[in-house]
Image 1 (spheres, rainbow, N blue to C red):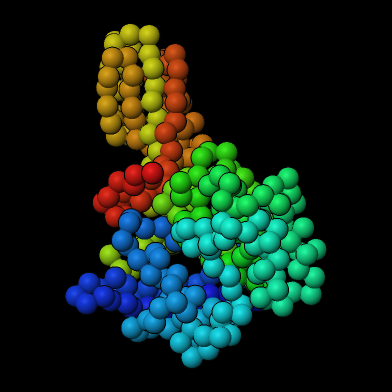
Image 2 (cartoon, helix red, strand yellow; image 1 turned 120 degrees about the vertical axis):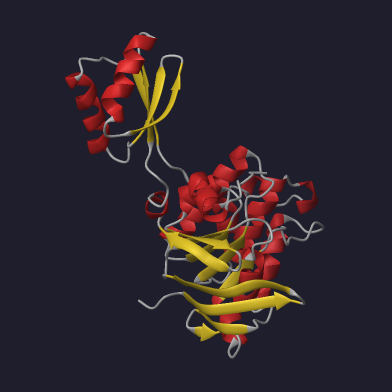
Length: 310
């Protein structure tokens, strides 16, 4: 199966500000691909180029097998885009919004398509209410439902859950998973690292105009130094003895009260080795906890900027 999206050496600048400086990535058909980056990193610029809303300065980009510069109409026929703000008509009802888009896209039975999507996105009870009365989460679900009309093989979602409450975010995640399970390729940008970790098959981090790293969430987490293990002991004497025993082979990160933090818990085997070292020294910890790298750690390591979730 051919890749859904291929980007090579993509560049784009605005006056003196060079936003994209040679971006490269590939999105396989049927996968959820997440593009991460700080505000202003160029995530939306990348989407705008791939959806033919903006011209690139250089490089190559194909979507659905079509060149975005040479075959923009073919690209637009292969995709759907849900931007950062819901593009719904407040005057119309949810059903009317869906039927209108169905008619514009020449769907065979717009009314039935609308009914099916209303049910799929848990909007059937509000089908005949004006969208002006909808909550943010309902508007977002309707927006994505509209983007599915015509069964586009590739969907671009630009920060789809920004501003949603936790319940609405989880509902949106379920909708995105359902799309991917049906074979739809999802190109997702998000400012929420937990969202990428939860949803994406492949993640790429955009930093200073280029892709700093890409891979699965597990692969990216391996870029960060090993996990930390915290041991608690009955008293300071045991802690000091443990620090001597473990310090011969492992890095001691911190000693605080009766808690000892040690680097070297990358996997189950290494954690087991730490316990063996303590047992050989006849030291019994009262408790322990493991801190494994997160995508936040990866993002900080790659960009030097802590990610703030809004």
